[in-house]
Image 1: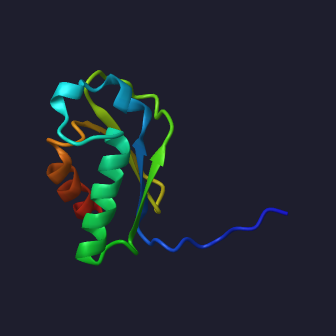
Image 2: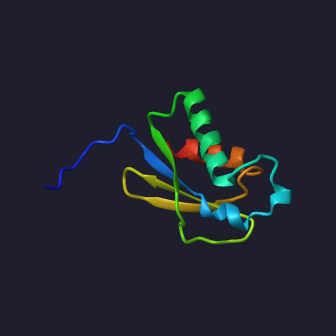
Length: 105
């Protein structure tokens, strides 16, 4: 039986593609590991430190079908149904992405 569930996050979910890592030049990255996983960790830590982690869920995703070389695809899906997808450099643009996402919650 289908049962609707309430989510523990009130404003939305952020999906970070992990497949994009393959198209980002290693020379443009400072951190080891998967750039998508690293971006997710950065966002979760930042939202936790600001007390906003209960408003937003940050998860990794498989391909979001927005494949542009040297960028990371990130989708914000609001609980009101609006979805926005962005492409960013996973390290150089992370502060700007964080600021944008905070403005949405």
